[in-house]
Length: 200
Image 1 (cartoon, rainbow, N blue to C red):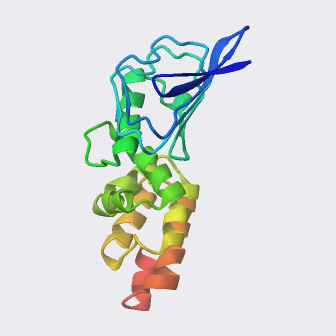
Image 2 (tube, helix red, strand yellow):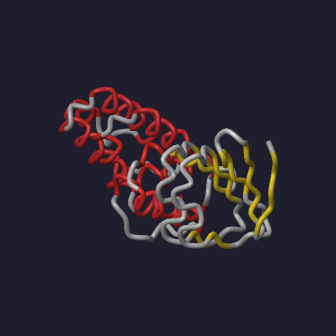
C-alpha cells in the first residue's frame, strides 16, 4: 500500500485494487469535472469544507463508492443511486446552499440529515421555512425517528402548524406519528378547551 499526492489530492493505492480511498487535503478548494470518472475501485472519499466546488461528473461511474464524507458529514452514496442526483446533493452540502432546485425526495432527507448532524443555521432556516412540506414528506415516509428529533429541538412545531400535521397523520394512517404529535400538542401547546382535544 502506498500514498501519493498529485495536484493537492491525496490518494491511497494497493496493487490488487488500485485506488480504494481518496482523502482530499484542506489546501484543495475545487474538484474538477470528471476528476475521478470511472475510478470504479474507489470505496471511500473524504472531502474537507475548504472544497467549495465539485465539477460535474466528478464521481461518475464510481460503482463501488460507498461513503463520501464532506466536512465530517457522511453522505450515503449508494442510497441515492443516480449520479446526477448525487452531484446535486454534494454541491448543495459543499456550498450550504439549500435554495438549490432539486427533487424533494433527495433534498428533504439530505437537508434533514445535515441539520441533525451539524446544526447548520442555513439548513435550519430552510427547514423552518418549508416545515409543513418537510413534515408531510416525513409523515408519508413514516419517519418517526426524524420527527422525534425535530420535536426534541423545540424549534419547529407551533400552534399554527401542529393541527394541520395531526390531520395529515390521520389522513395517511400514520398512527404512531399521530400519537407523537398529539402528545406533543398536549404537553407543550395545549388546547383552547377540553372538547377540542377529542375532536382531532
